[in-house]
Length: 87
Ligand SMILES: [Zn+2]
Image (cartoon, rainbow, N blue to C red; front, side, top):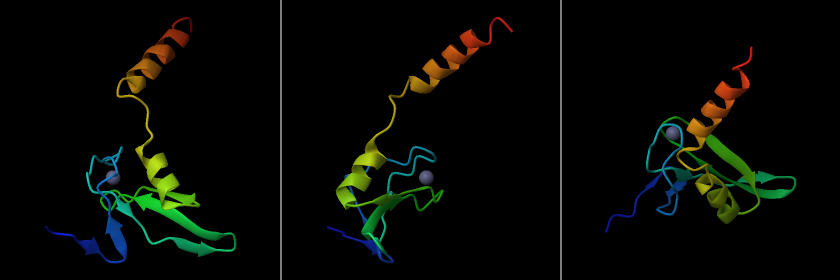
């Protein structure tokens, strides 16, 4: 088995691929120490998008994995087309 960590970040297999670039190895970053306690994040090492500000790694991971269904962008496009039809 190869458990690898890059820098201070830990690879997590429970995370979905990056919604922007599709990279399938998003990282759990080192939590930030703030005045209100540790804040956790998930980020993409390829396109550097990041979700941060979560009070637990679990919450950050859940938020990262939460995304619209695959067809929702098409739905929005269709709705916008209908809205602008009368212009
Ligand atoms: Zn990405």
